Length: 334
Ligand SMILES: NC(=O)c1ccc[n+]([C@@H]2O[C@H](COP(=O)([O-])OP(=O)(O)OC[C@H]3O[C@@H](n4cnc5c(N)ncnc54)[C@H](OP(=O)(O)O)[C@@H]3O)[C@@H](O)[C@H]2O)c1
Image (cartoon, rainbow, N blue to C red; front, side):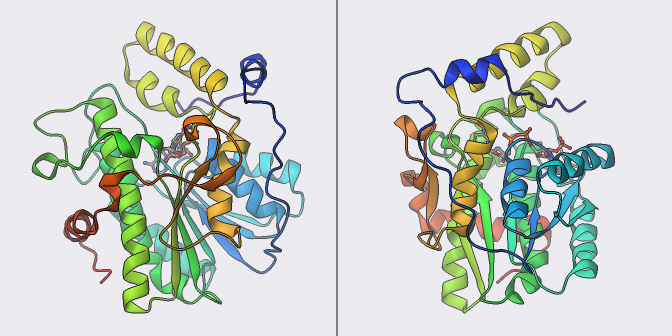
């Protein structure tokens, strides 16, 4: 069962730490997104829900592809409670299935003839033991990277049909700088480390975003690509990944302790969503760049340029990952 994260005492405690006073202003309500369409993966929870709210507040029509209809309906209720005018369509998507990704892209094409924003946000973190997607990929590499790679490829015509080109924001993480790509074992078949595989998948997210921007510029694709990370944000990511896959008592401890650390040391999900919105909407955001919080260690604070880890700045690595991703997902993006 997916854990939802209510705000509370621990979040307030976090705001009392040095440098954590909530004095910075969130991005203002501009630009006006009426008439624009946005798709947010993982939009029923955590950061995705807050990005969806930020886009809906500005008038965008939302396409929310979800794994579970009930959780999707709860998200629609939460969004319309704060944005009564929000136009939201729920779709089905399981990023752990290439068949589902393809069906989702077809459903999107039935709903709209152009897509202004694609927010590649959904993710799973550090299951305690190695799990696989329906297509036999290690779960984190499969969901976080390959599923989004295939979705972006399938939606490219709709993105290119948007006025001025659609914008693809791919959500990476501070974890992206903590590992490299293990091309000899991308699926962690020989050695599985829960956080190692997560780090690899988040580096793949970042490399993909930067390579998408390069290829769009080189080939004249009418789309924009930026990456973003939320710092540390108080969401249910630990509880849903690691916590849910440990044996019951350990899982509960992990859910409680891990959740508490994120809530005290991190920022709220709404604040964590700001760099993602900044990458999508700010007039200062540039293609091929990476955005995150500006506070200590990029863990919290107002959004702005993020430090790109050296491994992610290697075009040869990105090109190799791109070729492998095309092969594994049977897509051809060019
Ligand atoms: N929170 C942080 O501090 C932090 C830090 C760095 C990066 N991030 C990144 O931020 C993104 C959002 O995470 P979050 O913190 O908001 O966590 P979250 O609240 O657990 O949200 C994760 C979302 O991903 C969806 N999802 C998971 N597996 C999926 C699948 N197979 N197909 C489709 N959707 C799937 C979940 O849907 P269900 O409700 O169906 O499970 C949920 O909506 C992730 O990419 C994560 O790596 C988070």
